[in-house]
Length: 129
Image (cartoon, rainbow, N blue to C red):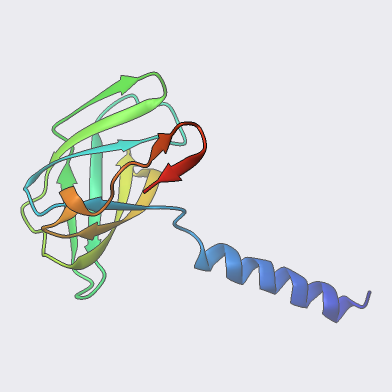
């Protein structure tokens, strides 16, 4: 392959990497008290903060995490967010001493409790959604 082809392939994968930087999305309701469950990329030891940015207005909010706990490898974060807007996308970054240890995308809605239902398996034959 020529040098230009390698460059094209590298740029293609970099573009896809930056485009797909959020591998999931958290759906939350508009209550001010929220609990986020994450698997951070490092062990948490110390104070945490969350930077939340409204994707529409580009306004950023920094909030201190009130408390957190581990259950196996899952980190549960308790935080109060009093700036949530219905039907709005947000991005959030979990910070520990200025380092990003987790980031995700949030969709805020008043109907978050009824958006998804768990599938049930009937007679081990098929899944009912």
